Length: 366
Image (cartoon, rainbow, N blue to C red; front, side, top):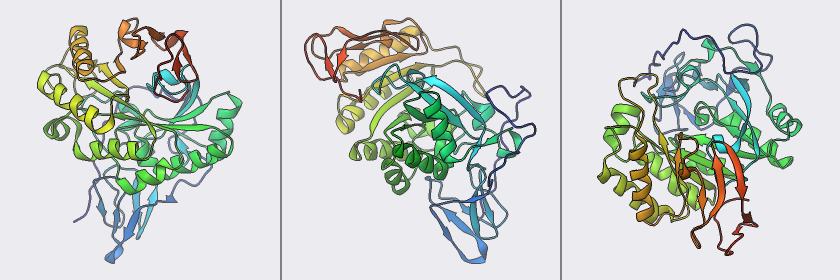
């Protein structure tokens, strides 16, 4: 049975996300069809991909679920290797990473495509597009690392769209970055298989997982995926000792019920420990989900209280600039050790991974 590609969202908005673009969609000077990894060749020139839980079975001439991998006569190829559709320098807090070298800059890159189809997608003009629908420019892995060095970026962030779909490119950049002491951070939906994830963990430094909800029905109806593989990813990241932070986008009436939130934070506490940062982020109407209002601040505050009551040490509120929920509290003395306003840090009292006031260890990478 073949996998037929989805026809993705097409926006009439002009391309705005890229700092450097080629004059026509699909142009670039590098190889646009590099052979993919993690797939099997089958009879009749079919292939089966094993990058993510879809395990796409793809006939010759067709693409996988993500629309960026093509069966070229029995050889599976990536259509986005080196094809950068967006590049920016961002504060690491924007990803958001709050316990990974706060105040540092990240060279952020993206391609086209995603392996899920969230109805609330915040970057649909990138994530819900096919490669040929976007302007892009070619950057070899070493070029990305050099750009990070030249712009004094501590890390490279794979972000905006889903980096799992350009896994080969991400791994090659991260490996090249390690040689020059440039770190790599992944901003992902966590919908990836265990084998490629463990290989990726050998060359990256941090991984932010968007935990969309804690019910599989929500994943199927709103996200176009499944919950269990994402939970498996979180457990694997802990086993591999990769610094992990979780974002939970709170969507009014869909994933904000008390019972689900309580079940989720109990799972996080039990399986991942009390030190994993958990960010409850405010929803704004976007993409296919414009009929709901922004998340009430009171709902976010309730979610934070549930998480703290479950024993989590580092609970945050996102997309509410200026709220006290952006700052880091010491789990020992309760004082603010990192004060944030939006993406800006106004105070930092973490010294060598410890609270400056009481010497309690503050989990993270400092």
